[in-house]
Amino acid sequence: MAVQLSETTLVVKGHDECFARAKGLIEKFNLPGTSGGLLPLEDIEEVTYETKTGYFNVKQKAKTTHKFALADS
Figure 1 (cartoon, rainbow, N blue to C red):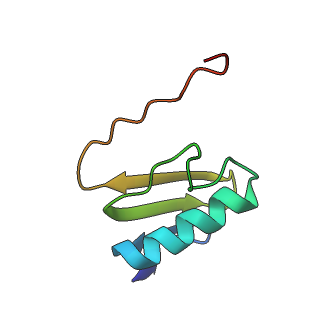
Figure 2 (figure 1 turned 90 degrees about the vertical axis):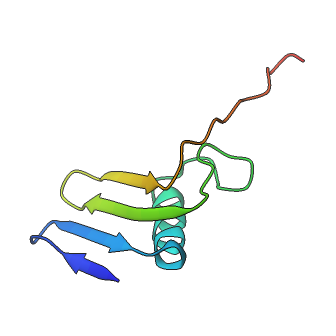
């Protein structure tokens, strides 16, 4: 479910819709993808997107620890 809080702020709730929105924003800003990339997207509750600044926040149900492999190992 998407809720428009203001002209520039959008809040999306529900894992499936949030996953799609977060993945779209990651691609839009050319960030490393969700498959082994920058953000592990698991059990997403909410995505907030501020269109004026490009800021987005992904809220997950539980803390996720993500470790990056060393480049030279």
